Image (cartoon, rainbow, N blue to C red; front, side, top):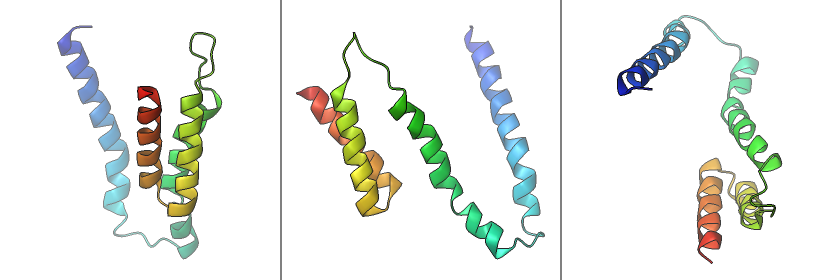
Length: 105
């Protein structure tokens, strides 16, 4: 692909993303949402995070016929951090730090 083609693809993807999200944000000022639906919306970020992370955990590829134990140790540390800190940000930071340190060893 040429750089112009890549630029056009990025612009089209950005426009599609913007155009699918902007109308709901613009109309949200005028639409009253029930407390139950609002409560459900609060769980969307953690649901998306889980949907992105779970396949990487359960379908992690085997490297050169060996299981990459550093990855699973980082998953365990990140999971424990998420459990105790109640923060996805701290869980991600802990997981990245652990896997980086274990790969240095």
